[in-house]
Image (cartoon, rainbow, N blue to C red):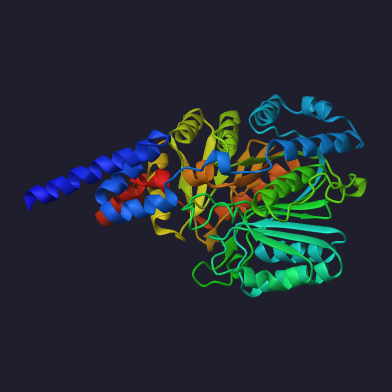
Length: 483
């Protein structure tokens, strides 16, 4: 019997090592998967089949270079026709710190600086969804929507019904959603929209489904573009819980932006590329002028920004690089909000260097979990960062879902990317990086208000935890790279 058990353990160990090392990945994720496969012999391999295999690059997108190149050319022409100084002159007028970030994204994400934007900040679900619904009702030509979560609940039905009415009026409506993030929402839910002439598709549904065992790569982006002139980007999804209607979470604290100006072109282009990668039988014409109208001077403002995307289709981890660069640029403050705090070594080092250089580094996370393992790992990293003088706050007034960063007086980021391995490496994400004092001040004011509803953690508070709680945090931390 002992020989049989020894043989099984040996075979399982060899298979675990061969399985994980057959695909290149970072060392942290490699060891996390080996631990899981070795300690959970059968279940671990089943989980790996669904969530551990890397994205097959050759099968990812059918459009890629041609569509992106055509849109880039069109956008450059439209931006060049706009009023005011050229993009190059606006970039040169930015502070040196901002210029370095602009250059970074131009090189690793091919993301030009978008100038002359008007930006509104929403942190209340009620205000955000009221504005979103009003904007959708006023649509004249096109509505393009992309959300990780589009639930078939009261709010979801309300927004779907607005889309149905707009489709009946002749508005060109497209909805893209993530099938796992929108669990419970089936194609039948969008049948009225299709019957009205609209379109709906799950993200990459024909390429990565249960048969293909690719559940680990999710479309976590939240993009809305109406008439090619007004865009939304941030952390809210569509569902009742984002209005605070779920007892489990209570009040939902998030951050979303409404944008008008040249940045909307880039939100639109990312939606079109994602749609054409997913709905391969219903491709959209990416150079159709209906999607890229001339800039409306009445909607423009003074905010400069870049729309940055990242995902497993690239090894550059563009948004993570942006986060690290923001931390490096901080001279006075670096204030972060994230529901999940599971940073890799590079971001941990950046945070520690900033804090030990005299920068006021603050990180705000929820006081409650929505994913237990993820939350325990968040608590572990919080306890470690506190030791380096980083102020960690637990938000008490419901659930904190905002993904924001405020640096000094003129740099900020708002988007869909959390401060964790998953958002850095596995999810398709989108963030707005902003170079504007007014918007930065607004986000800082909201942060300070949230601090009044938060509890500052200390080394002593973590030391008072039970041994069982500490063990769960350490155990969750070992799986952090694959959570």
